[in-house]
Image (cartoon, rainbow, N blue to C red; front, side, top):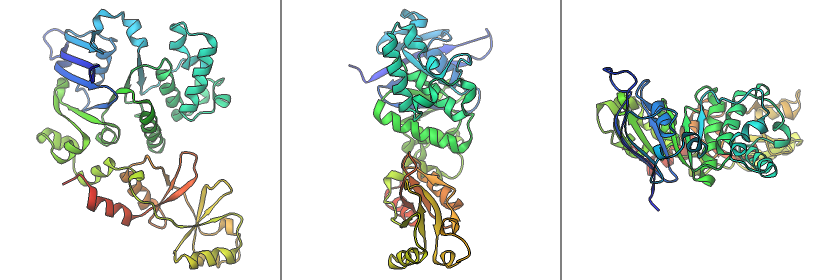
Length: 375
């Protein structure tokens, strides 16, 4: 079996005779199980390339192969049922429930009802949405982030080998966007799908991609390489310009919070006696402690000064912890959280919000000094 799942060979796409082609002589191979990110300035042909792969539009010249088979030999509708497609606007059917939206392709493929119901529940669990809560809701009842999760679930419904993702997180607020990116990276570790991902954001490309293709106008490939190599050895002035300044900070997106050793900070579980809390801080030689609720969710930063203010309950002492990061977040996310933190540390939680430890400037700097790929 070939390692190449998708191959574009001398692809050209022209819309108007006499005008420059939207895609010119594109040659590209997508390896089985990788996330290949297409990134470039507006109008460079990124989205056009995606639509060519699943034959929403036809190439003017050239050949496209899926698993060695010429896609022009496959019925267009049947081809698209084999390829998951996620777009920025989600495109859920407003008159259908969440379950019915996810079931769209399996129904077209003739799956049995019990198989479809099982798959719907399975996928809602996969994207961290309780089936009992969400499957009978309608799209208008979802937040933007929830709708995007359903869009991913629908794309995965028939278990396609290939996912095409066109700026899937582009219309979502930054915090939700980070969480969805992390959730997707976690899913990809298990699913190992072959993904072609389009974005205009180089930071997102570095975070999401196993390889990145930086495109000029007409889908000309300026550089196709790993994020590490693109950051350390940009091919030319165009790539350097597209990367922009701050290569070291961009290099922080190459490492995840899970790659560093977390700092264990004194934790106190509410309710706790004030004297006991002060004793714990002093015994551990920490400046701060973290107050957890009964589910181990971080609530507040506590220090001895705040605890000595006897006019307020301990649950309202100190400062609230407003920003959290997860193991799938990048070190750039961690640094941003530290800068927003009242104590200069970022609190790390798992996907259910349970406390794991803290990330400090010292642990981040240590990793950069010894392991940073940025030269």
